[in-house]
Length: 477
Image: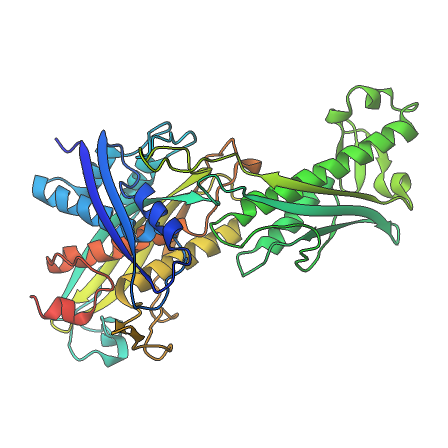
């Protein structure tokens, strides 16, 4: 009836000549080999080998990308064998809150796998590419280099869903540090935020400013360039910075707010006796302190004057444990993220050219603190997954890279990217600051298998590797 009872996975990774991050990537690949599905039993063997190839390190997805392509390809194969709709098979086996990972760890926050799949299924499909009078051949697979008139073009639709951990795992002490300073400059409250977290385009600088404005109720926030004298923020990786550095900024801001309110109690307690016992009900907003009934207590400028309030705080995600080397059990992960994709492709079976017509995606982000930045991360992860599906590959022969430049290593450009239609779910993670979840990596897990599933449907081919190249389509039809 389509219920998974046992999964057996054998994973072999090429680590290259040096270990780098390979052991951790291998462990992550093993942890997520079953995917976002409930299964009674699993045997997972994962190995990483030293080879004469260039060293391999971490990249977006950290091992979950490789196994994501494998388990989603397997789910499609099972559905075909059983004569089931691939969405229905996934719904029958979808994780829910408190489902168990193969490590025995419960997913103790929202796991909206079924909702992701249902929303993907219900989203309207794009229209078929026109093949009648007036259509432009440049819209066909192959674009300007197209040599046909669409006689061999077939439409395919593919679905995939994935799961990814957030933050450093397996007992690693994962934390970040923030220093927040409040003072009055030219009669206006100004907040300065110092962290060592690196901004690499994900929008962290904006987010830190948002958090400070929200927590301290000021308009002027200065986010300083990363400074390791403040204290460690760890690497900008593992979709962790919004979680740990955002949490550190939040905690430091709240410490500053508590000091300001305590100072207000000392200075104004005789005028506002409730400050003595109900300080938690007071808030700072628009440069003012207001009580629980929104009555003005004082402006920050009048209260603070030449005084400076400064607090430094560390923030850690909840503790994790290493995986037991004998049993394979443990609590290795602090948080999980879920995302799904639907890919619509046109494939010219005569030339082997593929054009991705549309990518639809649904992702649970816990809380979208900056919706536009969240959309950007989802679209970026989708683009990278698309590239891994049909373009990107480091070609190594006898230990030497044969395509060492972007002339030969192809990535999606604006001409390759289709419209991305996204739905953001917000099921707060009660263990995380503001309920947020890391966003950036999860889209790469499901976008690659969705594109390949769509190509399979269009061609009827098994397609067991990525990227799918034209010769993989034309030589076997």
